[in-house]
Image (cartoon, rainbow, N blue to C red; front, side):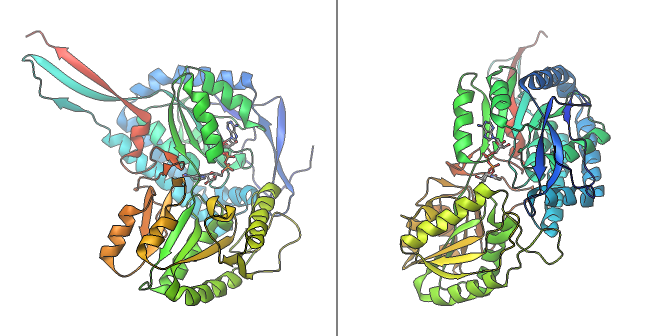
Length: 485
Ligand code: NAD
């Protein structure tokens, strides 16, 4: 076993089942991607642990679904308050295991907490309806009921927010959950669970099962008819696999998958605003967000100026460990991610892309990739077809609106898309024609608990956040009631 870093206050590094922290038979090491140093040994759940977790969730369902709106809302509000109270602890853990700069980690905790706050409100507003009958003497009621036990599978890039975005809605709806966090970032999940315990959620309502290898535990739970739904955020490849596995029991699914976001920059755009928006949306989390801009599509008349402005901004980015106050770009999550990004760049350059600029000083420990800007790319290149998930920006030009849209929509899935321009009629037309679940018009910071977050095509289905998000955890029951007089 590795020695672990001692300065970090760790959450319980075990399994949360039936309201108790339980030890596991084996453990795995969580490392700091900025240094490669071990941070903690975390218990790894087995299929037997998953069975116990499922029994606990199934046992909790009858009481949890009958809890009152105010009980659920008040527990969510207590959890929300604890998240904000422990913001600094959570942010330190998040940066340590995920790598993002502390300022971004703090912003993620605020963002994560905002979903709990939002769904506390939705718990209070949950309502069905009554219909006029077509037969006299009948009463027709439509009642939203919780779908049942939910398996929650989350990625490493937003270790706090991707959990609360799901749990807020599931818990508000009355569903017990089993959370399987990413094996790269279980500490934030365990800390969130510890705070949920302090908030007082009844035993069995929240289970957390870290796993060294996700497949067997997830597959076992997905095979069980007692799990009513799988809510997954992660890669499109794994989403596809989970959908296949879910077919046998016809599970409900929410899939929040990968994107390949374009930004269209028209000739009448405010270029400084466009550069600021592109830099924020591309380089946040070192380029590892699902709504990151992968492709800049720019009117050829202003391409040179935009390229120069972006190059200056890329060269000014400060790379380093997330705990340093001035860091803007942290490490990637692991060596596989570094290799993938480097390969995409190598292949693009070999196929004729031009390296406009790239930083050269990269820390020699940890998983860092230098911020770079590539131009003269085209949609035939893998770098334009895949999520880059690293600090590399690509630029291509268009001659007119039609071509811009063709380029933007030349991908299987659309999560986010953005555009910058001054002609609002064209902005509206283009926004409507873009193949994406969310469009930012003269803005790129679109994430918010009050918007329906989700994609189209291979970017998945289901919506998280907003008043629509809770529907993913509800099913309508109709009562046709012949009342004796
Ligand atoms: P991933 O698909 O590798 O893993 C996601 C989760 O699934 C993890 O918990 C992992 O342990 C688990 N998992 C992996 N293989 C599995 C299997 N065979 N069976 C069951 N579970 C399995 O994704 P990642 O690398 O953790 O995250 C990055 C991806 O997530 C990117 O594609 C990104 O775009 C996407 N993402 C999407 C959104 C969104 O809202 N659409 C948000 C954040 C991230």
